[in-house]
Image (cartoon, rainbow, N blue to C red):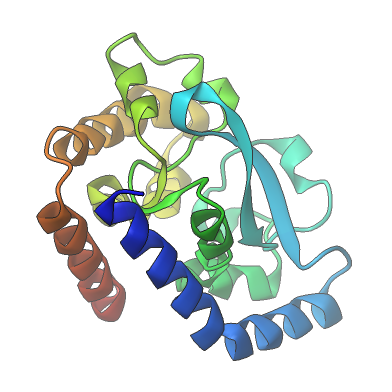
Amino acid sequence: MNVIRCFDFLFSLVGLIILSPVFLLVSFIIKVTSKGPVFFKQNRVGKGGDDFKVFKFRTMYLEAEKRGLLTVGGKDNRVTAVGYYLRRFKIDELPQLINVLRGEMSIVGPRPEVRRYVEMYSPEQRRTLQVLPGITDYASIEYRNENDLLALAENPEEFYINEIMPKKIELNFKYINDRSLQQYFKIITKTLIASIKGK
């Protein structure tokens, strides 16, 4: 077990324990405000190109995924009233600590994509699959308000594929090409600062 994996295991375990009251409260609110399960599980592409199920708090109505893979800011009527706030403050991402604990993800790494978009990667872009996907990285910080950008686009999916996705992958390489403990903690610190500032 390498050093980064040791920190991943420690942070995810401690995080799940400390945040357990938050998990219980959010789970209760989700259940009483809309029909469906507490968690949303979706197939994503992980290290080596293997699929795994990523965990999130459910923020959409049932079967909303059938109407598209992308969410587009405040105008997306598939998102529940509670889900809007869970997304806004990134609370919906907390269950991914389970994925980190299981070794399917890291705290830091490229955000895992759905198979549909990974199939569009160039051979160079597929290098992002050589490392564990993560909860946060430089692209997550830079595009923290990605849904708002998509909401302004005439064709959100086309804009994501042609404009946002390539730029996010470029930022992924900033960490992949210098995957060190220093960068690991630097990204975690930047993420915490961005969360506090709300940017």
